[in-house]
Each structure stands twice: as C-alpha cells, then as structure tokens.
Length: 472
Image (cartoon, rainbow, N blue to C red; front, top):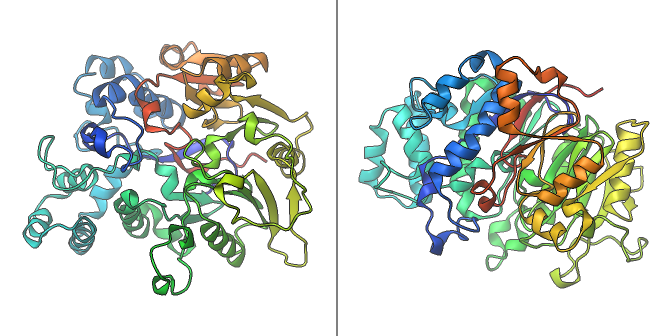
C-alpha cells in the first residue's frame, strides 16, 4: 500500500461494482441518498461499468482477463465474471472488490456478530432481524449488507448507492491510510463497513498502525443543536496527493473546515507529509469536491473548470478565513507547513497553485498546461463539469479515463495533442495483440456514461488507489 501521486502507474485499486441497491433508488429519495436521478441498473452495469472493470483488468491484472474477453461477451447477460458472489468471479488481487473483502472478514464469527449488530443499530432493525442476519453465510450476508436487500424484491433497509464512489471513504497517502468522515448520514453504513474492512482484513494487517481516523472536535456532542458546520467531515474527493511531501485538501460542500483541520493535524503529527494546501471552493452542489473541478493528467497538464481556476479579484493580503458565508464565497488557497517556523503561503488562484505544483513539486521542465472543461466555452463548461469532465482517473501519467458525453472537453484534449479513443476500440486492440498497454501514451479513453453520469461522479470518484508507482 503506497500512493504518492495522482498520476504514477496504477497497480492496485479498490472498487465496488454497482449492486442491486442502485436499482432500488426511488425518485422521492434520490437526493436524500445523494443521487440526482434514478438509474437503469442493467444498462449501467453491462454497457458502462463493466467496460471500466475490463479496462482496469487489462492494465492492472492482464493474466486474469487475457483471452477471456470473447467468453465474457458471450456471457454478457449472466455477467459471472463481474459478480463478487459468483464462483466465476475474477477475484483479482489488483482490481479489488469491496464485497469480496467484506465476505472474507465475515468468515470470522466475532467480526460477523459485531458488524451485524452495528449495521442493525444504524438502520434501526429489530432484534429478530439481527439474529436472522447472523445466521446467513458470509457471501450472502455481504451482499445483503451492501444492497439492503434479502433479494431483488425484499428490502430490509436503505441501499447505499454511493459506495461505488470508493475514494470518498478512504485515501492512501504514502504508506498511510486516512479514513474519512462522510458528510451525509446516508453514507454512515458505508463508513462503518470500510472501517471493519481496513482494520480486520489480512490485506491491510501490516498497515494497521498507519491507519489514521478523523476525529470530531473535542466534546462536540455537548454543543447545542445539530449544527452541521461544527462537525469534522472529510471526503476523499477533496484529497489529492501531489508527491510524498505534499497533499491538497479541499473545503467544500462535503468537507468542513474542521475536517480539513483535523486531517492536517494528523498528517503533520505522524509526519506523513511536509505541507498541505487547503483549497476552499464555493459550498455548492455543482462542485461537491475539488476533484469535480480539477484532476491531474500529467505532471504538467491538468483538466480544470475555468470559472473557479482563474485569478481571484480579492485582496490576497486579507486575513485568511474559511468561514465566509456561502453567498460571499470564492476560491481561497493557503499552504500550511509541518515546520511551524514557516509562514503559511497564499495563492491568488487555482491555476497559480497547480503551476507551482508542476514546476516545484514535480520538477516539470515543460510549460504547465490547462485543459478546460467545455473547452472554456459557456455554457458547455458548466454543463460538462456537471457530467464530470474534470473528474478523470489516471491509469498512468498521461493516460486518463473519462466520460464519452463531454464533447467540447474532448475537443480540448485533441487540441492539446492527446489521442482520444473509445474503450471498446482499446479493449479489442489489446485483446487481439494489436496494442500493448505499455505503448499507450497521452490518451483520453472514453467510456459510455448515459447512466453512470446520473450518479454525479466520475472515475476519479469510483476508485480508491492502493498502490501506484513512484513517478520520480
């Protein structure tokens, strides 16, 4: 377990394939469960997310998929290769499925009883149902806990559709794992499940001393009322790793100033990094996390939303505050250092910060380039940012995954000299030995997105990298 950049070659990643709970989200509860719309589960799985898994397998674990693509297509309706509870599931050691890890730890009867009791407490289940769940065998129980259903027609508690966005729940920074605190109650079960996995699964045994948990402010429970702004919340979409000394943390709709502050204290206390840059963005649903407005493509190339990236019109010498009312908010950036003798540094714009990252942290000798959402043309910049034009996952430096629907952002990539390929085309070329993954460079790989984009998260959200190569 080691991640010290956003663009080093990806070797291991934690994901969660869409479970049946996504197909049971109803319109009246969609926003309560943090979705903008209901999705067609079968299309989302077969025609969209399965492509994502195939591509990850070819890059991260080719032995498990090489030569099987035609068989997988023939079995498309059954999808055995993609089902964690099926005997023909891929069980990759590099494209790691949360449901499989959960089933593994449920083999331990003590963990099983404790986790079932905790889930039932969160969901308000009665004692008889709790007893009934403890009698289920681990593979079946894991599926129930994640989907909220005994089967496709009998729900016992709410689904947790946001678990496909694994990054929000934990982030690997160097050889430490920062366990996050999601902002919304709809994600409480997810957070509980991930804590049990990280502290109990053999995959993470040797790293348990390096697991950091975000605490709430001291005696927060004595504070009057239930003021959400007083809570320490932190989600992985607001954390980006620059290199082994520097991390970016966003203050956003989902990450509170208290959460960012607690994360900084932990990262400095355990000497995980030397500096942290805090990026406060407007607390709006449009943005949600910093990875919805920018992600890294190469050490000198970033995809970004122009409207929040340009030079600020405020006085950079004003006292720093992260408690500005929402209607007055702009993007504010301040860099803190573990060495408290150093004075925190302010940046006048996101572009200035990212240029500094490229030039000074990553030692780029090339000019820093920005690829703008919607090719920086209104209203396409906002429209395509909404459908995750800026939320890209780097499989290696210069090779990123994005949605096929963001036409003008795709044009912006082409204008910067990148190749643009559809995922089906890439998969066929790899399978027939016309293309080696090592040869793919400076490429935006497009995946189908009609249903996935309804969930308001891209491939950066749908990945929790556990191991990347050191880009140095």
